[in-house]
Length: 188
Image 1 (cartoon, one colour):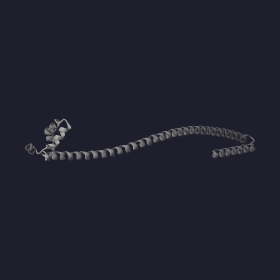
Image 2 (tube, one colour; image 1 turned 135 degrees about the horizontal axis):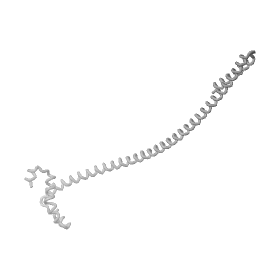
Image 3 (cartoon, helix red, strand yellow; image 1 turned 90 degrees about the vertical axis):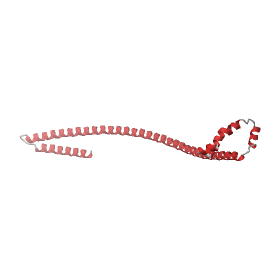
Image 4 (cartoon, helix red, strand yellow; image 1 turned 45 degrees about the horizontal axis):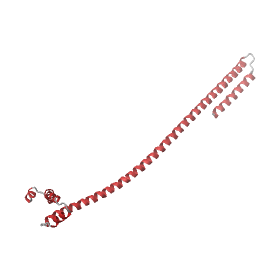
């Protein structure tokens, strides 16, 4: 066995594992009772070989324990991180739901405001068109009346005996009515 281990450049751990697989485990399976097992352990003639094997397994067990402790610590840290992440996720989800709710309310309110403003603008536009039409009608009536008065005044001037007082009265009425209309137009 020594020649095999040296020629293959095997480590002590590899040799110990090979001996365990090939020699010690099969021999240990034959011991059925605890007394047989105790007798086998206490009747070992060369204890240093068993000590080396036990020391190697002990170191391996300690390394496994350290790895397990490290892994357990890492798992606990990951669990804590996961818990924190889940809390943050829930908080973010809650904030998102609240934000969506606020956004929906704002959209409803702004849609209502837009509808109200649109209705108000339509109403105002109707009133302005009506006011414009009333002013247009009033100015047109006034202009027709003024033209009629000036026509009468002109015919009074063109008669064989011009009646100056008639044209004067008509011109004064026209001037007064045009001034009144100018004032109304300026006032809006």
